[in-house]
Length: 201
View (cartoon, rainbow, N blue to C red):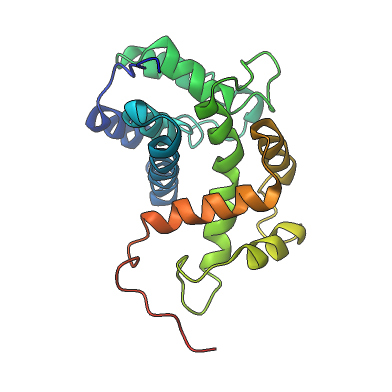
């Protein structure tokens, strides 16, 4: 495995994120994707877990300040990351997840980039579904429930289902496998994972 260098520490990346994002939802989303990426890194590329995590943390760095220009998403982020010391590899990985908005950006090639592309929108859908549940917990959330929410285009309408489908295809995974793996990833860092008691149905 090739060792990937981010050029910034996790602490520096978080400071950069909070410099350009003030909405707690956006910061939490960055941290959710970070932890999801770390989970998958431990399975597929453990040597580069830190790199995968920083990619996840900074993937939407410029979204809050430029959400009215989705076709330019991550283009504004590039000089910010470079100015903080981030490497071209870090910028490329982040930009690859928005190639659906802008075909001039690099398409995902590395497993890490494909997983970011496939799971970033999906974590948002899972998060939106979980808060509607009586338990408010991902620990008792199942694939069958996620499939229902995925098919209901009115639910979390801003989540691009086509991106999720395309990401699964890139990875060579069925949608159910992507759903199951991503739920398990989010369960791995859920705050109540060690204390959750399912509500009796």
